[in-house]
Image (cartoon, rainbow, N blue to C red; front, side, top):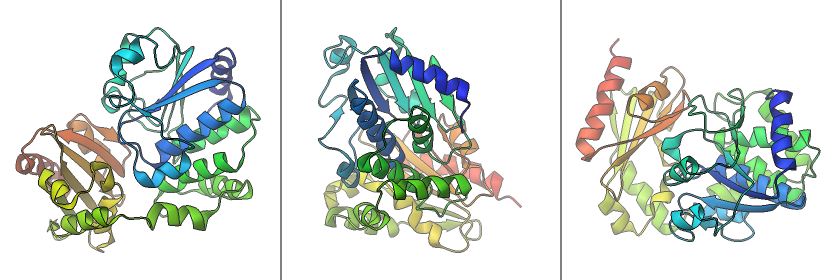
Length: 334
């Protein structure tokens, strides 16, 4: 658990703030969505005026957490409107599940022009020091656990909706309790959230048994690009812009796709390359534990965890894949 001293500083910031803006990293995953939803609901119930803003679209399967669709920067609110305080004139800005400028496109510009206090709650090692107060707990498997700790520390009521959101945050960042970051704290937190009303079977159905035909077809395309390297220890897959056009799927539909080739027994590390509309290539990296993929991601300006990281590379796709391949060649040279 993060130090009580940092919780005290966070509580002080929140208590003297009326209007609070909350955001998280681009391409929000379950941890990001769950942590934001839990904070929004808890702080609203505490009498605060809360406005969440997301930096890119939210995957459809996480929308079940939201009472109404939240604002997306660049779609529902412009950067200028944010700067001018037309969306909200915050007394406090809260950032969860990241402390990295590279994961806050557009919003990082707003932060630089802003003089309001910033509270960061994050569990990643990568740290740009964006917060005036930072609750940084790298021992936490998910940012949702830090939020859970804070809500309990403040003795806020945790209702069924908050419990569900926090449960989603934890189970998605632990691969539904199958990653190596699962420890006693994770299991204890999940047990407590179930007692508070989270329903694991319903949550699993909503997250993993809700594929659209378009998303399923896109995954089929990706599976057909599978290549194994270094005696099957490193697996690569990719998706081109045309694949999204052909299937009618969206870029946010790729979440969890990278998990598929990790089912191959020989695979120790995997990379999924996705061509972006701006010509760059998003590279997601996963490891079974022996390879530190964060080190590789950081060489290209990215970051994350030792077993789950990502970055963006310049195109074309082939050269991006070759650049990452060279880094894994060093890892598997023996």
